[in-house]
Image (tube, rainbow, N blue to C red):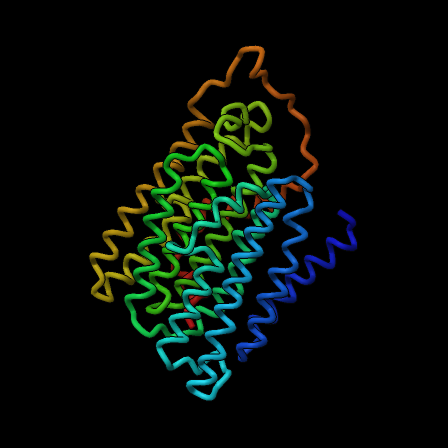
Length: 348
């Protein structure tokens, strides 16, 4: 892709998200979300592959549906209350509709069906943008909305953690596994959204750091399926020893960083007398942990094929910068002892 066009598209991505962050009016927020969607479509189709075009078409149709729902709900709210402001959501009908529209935008269960299919058609760089940056603008709107009933977000969150764990069990494609991982982590964030917004924000940022580390690691290895993980040690031996730790951090095992948000969310749910929800969320985390362990096993404990079909790849020197991966991997593995400092930073 032409670097000038790439710069314009990335600038539009940043502009759309910033516009949604800064808006207190529903029309401006909707406009920012639309700019975001239109900017990422060319990035999705830059490979000129039929699967990439199919993924971009599906993504565009889903995002257009969610944007139409959002616009209809904001107009309904203005009609019922006379206010266009984001903070004036007092009627249950438009508030519920807006939460469902934002859930469709970010891929919460049961509105998640598009996400694994879209991820499968993208390259790892665009998939990284889709699973991290594209979540920021809808989450900034969800943080400002008071849900009409506390059970709505809890139901969406629990269903997402279960679907995210259950759906990834039988997958062999890494991008689909990462999509289901994203659904499960979004469920954890939404579970505690109405009780502790600062904890949701902290979980989102930690998820972005961990996902960035994993996507960049797979990109360095050129890995897109479980079978290619078995020969990754021949390409990057040091990275092959780090990736299982990143996967276990995503699964939430102590003493890695990923344990921190899950621990704090379970603690907050218990404080709110929601012990059954906390128990179900903790059990669903075991489902996710299983497929992370499966990937770790494929990387470290299986022998690579030694026949003529499965020959080992040459160790090409990578041209990618190692510093961003080194920083994000360090944060992915070692932030748990800094939990008190992190809590102080995100308390507002």
